[in-house]
Image (cartoon, rainbow, N blue to C red; front, side):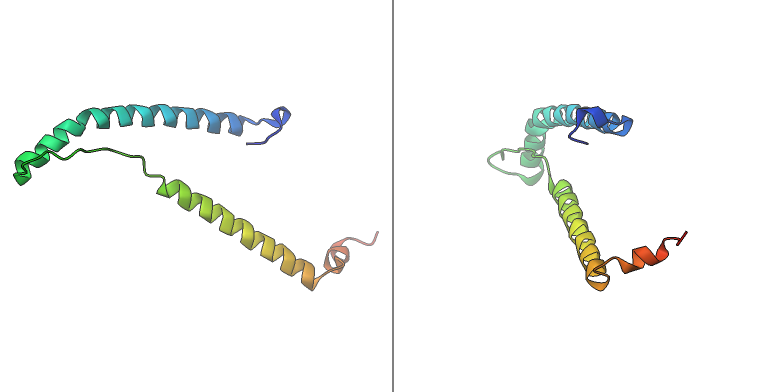
Length: 103
């Protein structure tokens, strides 16, 4: 999203709305998993013949988000390198000037 409130696009609004919906869904799923933890714990005790019931906690996995952030950073670095290489090969912008029509 853009930092300037004057330049908010429909895409920005849709992304924000989707993020809010996702947060609500994640909260609901977390509540249901927390509620079901006792059931899973009992299931483990019965199926494995355990003496003590393990405490089960469900946590959100952020690895996909972390991967996407790394991917975005790598892509930005690659783009910067392309620009730097292009500037090094054509420091005065001669190629850009040659492409312009003379008249």
